[in-house]
Image (cartoon, rainbow, N blue to C red; front, side, top):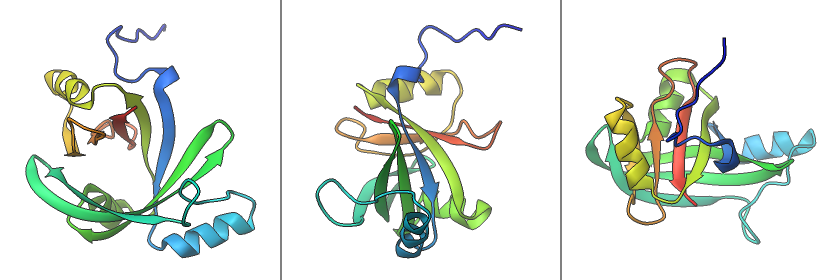
Length: 155
């Protein structure tokens, strides 16, 4: 059976950017992955990881949270490690309910708010979002089948 991808899809292969993995301990995870040859990890010309505060929405309600983030190039793609580090967040919910591991695949878009609105009209739940009119992102619940969330973020 041939798969028919809608022409107005948000998720184009040329816009694929990274996979996001939730971890309990950033430093321990980086040390282990580096020891087996995955990496190097770090934030562009800087530290091993950064802790970023966010203000946005979680399940449609205002929320504030922090997350530690580190990245590594893996071939042409990127591996993003995420450790929830404060506040109520979609990442902490996932960690509590599913444990460590693959959380999302991410695509870059020019208009996060516009893509969020398109997806809402298709009945897709927006789990969390921040700064939709700037350099923001949203996690959308594509995990209802297959178990992987999708992130859309500003190009």
